[in-house]
Structures are given as C-alpha cells and as structure tokens.
Length: 525
Image (cartoon, rainbow, N blue to C red; front, side, top):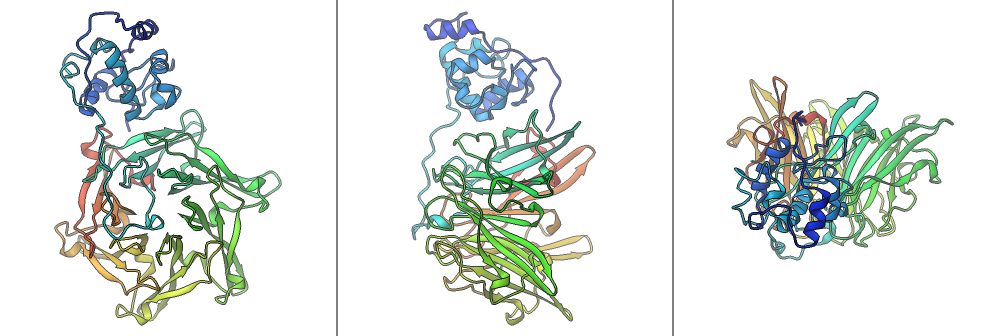
C-alpha cells in the first residue's frame, strides 16, 4: 500500500474537452483505439507510478492523471467527484472515452512505449453470465457477495491503515472474481480526510436493496453518549456495479426505540430472513448473566430497500425452553438450511470439556418469515462418531456446497502442530432439509500437496466464486513479514459437488502491485 512521492503528469486541459466536444483535437493524434487493462496499467505506471488513488492536493490525480474538468466533461462525476476517488475500473472507463475523443496525445508524456497507440482490445469485454446448474438455485442459499452482478461472488476487505495523527484511516478493497481466480485488489473507498475506526467496525455483505448486486454493511461503534447510553450505528456501502457509494447511515441506536445498544455485545449476520428478495441483518446479542443463567437475544433489522426498519427482538433465551444461552460460546452463521427461500440462523455452541472430550453442538433458528422458531439442536458431537469436537479449533461458515438448493455448514478445523507442521482440516455438515448429516472431512492439509497449513493464519469466507451454482471456500492466508513487507495470499477451495478441490492460490500480494498486504489489518466480507 505504498504511496509514491514522485512527479506526476497532468492529463489534458479544459480546452481539450471543449475541442473534443466539437470533434476537434489540440494536436494531431494517433488513431483512437480501445486499450486493455494491461496497457492502461503501463500508462498509469508512467503517469503516477501506478498509484490509482494519487492526488496532488489540487484534485488532479488518479492513476491516469485526469484533471477535474476532463473528468467531469467525460462523465466521471457519475462515479466520483474526482478521478482519484474512483476505482481503477471507473478511471479506465473514462480514459477510454478520452482516448476515443482525443487519441493518444491526451497522454503526451506516456503513450509512447506503453502500447497505447497499438492496442485495440477492450479493457472490460462483455462476459456472459454463467447459468447455474440444476436444480435452480434458491436465492436465499446464496452468500450474496456478488458486487458487480455477474453471477460470481467476489471478496471484500475492510483494511486498516492505522492512525494519521488523530484521524483513523481505513479503506475498502474488493477482489473481483474472474471465474478461475481473482483480479488484483481495487480500492473502492477510502476514509480520506474523514476518520473511520477499523477496530470499531463489524463487516457484513448482502444485497440490501434487492438490485442483484451485493452491498456492504458495517456495524459501527460510536462509544457512549453524554448521558451514558451505548451508541451503535449501521452504515451501508451500496454497490453501483463498478464500485460503491460512500457509507450512508442506515440505522442509529440513539434515534431508535431501543435507545442504547452495545456494539461489543453484537454478532451480526446477513440473510433474506423474510424471503422478499432483499437482505436483512440479524444480531445475536449478549445481555450478560443473571445468577447462573446467561441471557442472549436475537434481533433483526429488516431491509426496506432504502434502509432498515427499527430493531426487532425475535428470540430471547430467557423466555425460551433453553432458558440459559452463553453468547460467548456461540459462533454464528446464516443460510437457507431447509430450502424454503428464507434464510435461517445456525450457531455452533461450546459445551466445554468432559474429561478429555470436547463437546460442541449445532443449533438452528428456522425463519418463519415473520420471526424465528425456537432454537433446535440438530447435531451434537457427543452422540456422533467423532465423539470429541473442539469449538475453539473451529471457524464456521455456511454455503450450498453441493448445489441442491439448501445451505450446508463448513468448518475449518485446527489439529495443531506436530514439529514444524501445522495441520488443518475442512469439514462439512450437509443439510438434509430437516437437519444435518454428521460432519464429513473433505480436505486435510496433511494429505495435501501443501502439507502444512496454519489455522491461526486463516480467515475464511464462503461464496460461489466460479458461478457454477455451488459454494466454494476462500481463505485469506497470512505468510507474515519479511523486513517491512507483509505477505498475504488468497486461496480457494472450489466445490466438486461431493467435496472440495485442493486449495489453489488465487492471489498473492508479493506478486501484485500492492506488494505489501497486512493480513492482521484485514476484515473479510
């Protein structure tokens, strides 16, 4: 994430825009061409050292050094006020218009030697949307991480740059699926001169407005009000297809009937809980203990398309037959486990140890459309052939791994170390519609070509990254630091329908223009 301190070349003038509009050019130009992303990368390398977010302080900037009048004249303000605030793709799309109108001399310092005058390949050719395999996929089983609406899920990362003086600096990046891997990460939002505390952010992903493109939701901690109430706000970043709008407040506890809401006591998940085609937010909330009983609640924030309704409590352990429920012993995920078109909640629950055996249970809260049924235990390690299952060694996700229209559970499991070798396994619990089959190991690092895999260095998310109608697993992996450079990799395990393929490295920061990427500063969505 380096910001080079170099001389930049400004792109064209206000006069150029006027002449272009009249069909004229300032200087003789080479014939207009389209240009591939690779060619535009070369131009950006010359113009700005490849820094797509560079700006000079006078709003000149971006990777291709587009001045404000040119940016506005060719429609760039439809994306962002200035070029440096837009994504790489958005900057290239405007540059294509400039190239068509003015030719290569719009970049007089950099077109020669970059191939800009010789290229004719469009940067973003139309790609047919993949057709899901039968049976037709239930929308509620989707992880809903498809930010550009092409039928393949993408990965988002909220990234922490630390503090600049008193200001907290954060950025939002996306890795766009190509079907067989991911593009280089693109920064789609930057807190800039505003302050955004990464440590106060819990990231979720879902299509909140029902337009077929996934948006970002962030539950944000605003601390305490002057009168002692805990204040939490929900922000949304709405997908435009080629980027995101800036964060917009969609709910604030201080103006809601709940009045006070503790961010630290909240575990948010996303799903279409009422089956209306728009993603909602659910929060498993910790009320703490009263005597020997732990109290936990389940709340929903229902999407209106333009925002969210007030928080509504849909389950309370204190009034449920379970009576006591330990929030700290709960790992929450969501999916349409019975295939009825509405998203349900699943919780992996820690019962602790009895002797040498660790006991874990899986519970579901089934959506009724207007709320949820009582908690139901659908699996217990103590009555399963595995006998012992360590909750602390489990990272839980959900996705329709076999493509049958019902979401399953995936668990990345830590076996610990033997000598220098770290062993990790991937298990699935397949939905039967009425419950789940027992856990099945579908991958083991010990028998894989990778041999060693560090569970503690893994952050996982599920999604249909190749668009075949079956959910896959993506893992952001921490390789640590070499000198001042942090290395992170993005691996995928693609579904075969009956299991998952061996992990494939889909992106590596060490071979990407970003060079350094700090895994510890990354929250995935």
